[in-house]
Image (cartoon, rainbow, N blue to C red):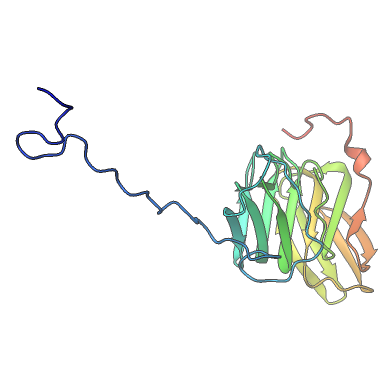
Length: 223
């Protein structure tokens, strides 16, 4: 045949079907943060920008938001793993990670982007090690223990009127991370880990009890 290839076959069907329009169903996935904040509401205190995950730059379209609920988590890896940002506006999270830290690639919070904890959030996390990067809102208390605690050793935060929050942790631990909106500056509290109790007075900033360096050189002591 002369000329070029025919546009149609003899039965009338197109040899080359028309190009499908671009599929936009995968665009704009998730809830995109507004300028200067993240979705889901809640007031953020001293947000910490961390990137413990594998991405060099977080995709702000991917956001894991927790606004409430009573959530109990136990993992030997990440308890909460966000491919983008992790926003905890409220709720009560109780987490156990006997091999990881508070916010690292094998810890309780693993986010490729930012982690933000709102002032209405409550958290008790029992882990092996501390922070990869600072994650301490004003309502946080971190306890570094000199002696490993056993599985089942209850963690209790108490004030003048009695227990504020508590968690019977199912695994061994050496670091306790507590966030509570009920902590008030100028008031006295205690954290009890098993039979060991620590008293402190809340200030306008986060509270650290013990010495993080005491964890160095222990190796993989929690098995």
